[in-house]
Image 1 (tube, rainbow, N blue to C red):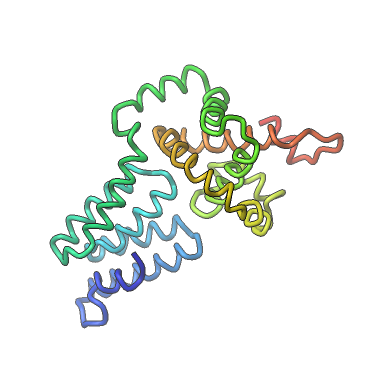
Image 2: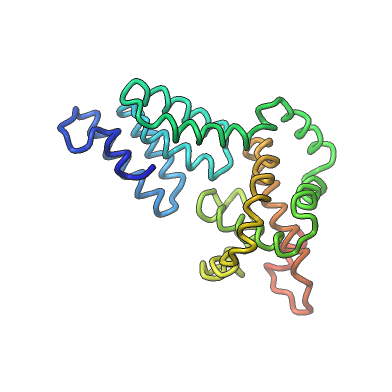
Length: 248
């Protein structure tokens, strides 16, 4: 669903009330922030847009950002509200929004099915290092190419959609080895690995989103660190940042 859809939801170029115009202006600012990967700013602007004038458009876009951040509770909530508003205002986008809702619910199946407490209890009992290793092993089964692809893909997603302060290992890599975006792009360019990884990614998101944000962020970051240490042999002349990653 692109820009023209949102223009139509906002009434196109027809004269509107001040509240309507304010909502649309904030929405456009949100789209600009999202296109520049200023995700927190975009979410805040979409929120203000919706508060200025309730409309499905900012909720649809905010849900997409929540989905990228694996915050499926929030994404599902936004889509459900957007669908109700769309039905009241135009009833034009029930099918694409319905598809999005089904996908989010499928990815959040463990969280929504009541298994969350079991996952959290297991984490508290065994710790992040053990559980993160088990998750990576069960999904990627020791495949070095898939593990490496996941590490780089995760760092890229975190760079674009997350607060780096919550992901110290990813930040260390971005400040050093992955400082240049071209390094990330080159690593993610292989279409054969990408296709195989996309199936693994679904499993990963289904498992990792069970945890609330704080635990989920730490789990994702721990997996990144463990993969990097696994795939990068220690050298005699280790850089300080490498030592930091291995000793985290």
